[in-house]
Image 1 (cartoon, rainbow, N blue to C red):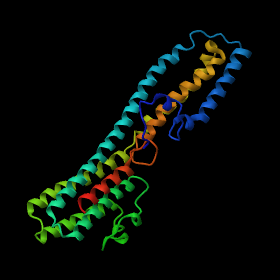
Image 2 (image 1 turned 180 degrees about the vertical axis):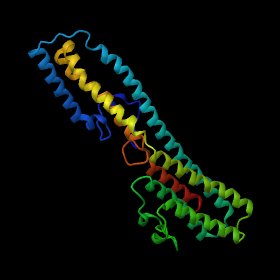
Image 3 (image 1 turned 60 degrees about the vertical axis):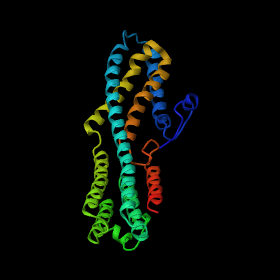
Image 4 (image 1 turned 120 degrees about the horizontal axis):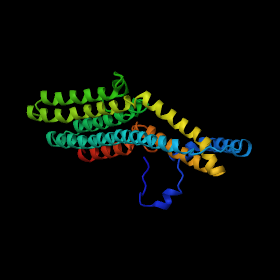
Amino acid sequence: MITYNPKDWWKLIFAFHRSDTFMFLLPGILGVAAYTGVVAYIENDILHASFKNTTVVHSLVGFVLSMLLVFRTNTAYERWWEGRKIWGSFVNNSRNLSLKLDTFLPKEDYHTRQIFRILISNYVYASKEHLRAGVNTDELEQIGKYNSHFFNQKKHVPNQIMGAIYEEIHQLYQKKVITGDQLFILNEELRSFTDNIGACERIKRTPIPYAYSLFLKKVIFLYVFTMPIGFVIEFKYWAIPIVSIIFYVFASIEVLAEEIEDPFGTDANDLPTDTIYNTIRDNLIEILK
């Protein structure tokens, strides 16, 4: 995710970044400009067409298209923001769990503290990578029996790690290190981790309906490529920049929505899950030291 100063207008206006839709859409913009220029030449210099009220239909359709794009953007942003709230919950849950473990565990039991610190940290890291291309278990911290072979025993690596955390807490209860009430308190915290990864999977695996996305792209295409037919009569060759700008605006909204509706990847506008993981890891080291 890109960090920036939203009040720095001039810098943002003239900034170009790989996440900027202008660079992504530049070939399309140039194509639309060339197409509009050809239509303007044919209608004005060859056919000498003289249609009337040629922009009325596009004005009406443009209003409807704008409403569709507003809904599309709002839906995508809601998914992005829900994902951010879930990862904020990961931060809070890991802090609460580690603080309670710090209180319940004997201060001199360094080994058990290290096991929980590593397992909780691994769970968050595995969740982050699970929502991307998949988990490379060699990148997880290892201690004792919790090694790459152990983590690879299940396809869903976060579930495998959470099972290990439950097992460690159950052993603490059997050894009477923690009481039944403390076991119940810890169980509530652990359940929230599984709820969070399930919510993230719901967002990732349920994109906007295919028919809606397909329809919107077709409408944008038809709107932009029929626009020069009428606009070149009224605006002559000035229709070239006008149509190009309109294409840039409408297509950019759709491209941005596509990018942020799956917020767990590595695109520039996706959630800063790497930074959030580092924050959680540092908190765990500080609390369970």
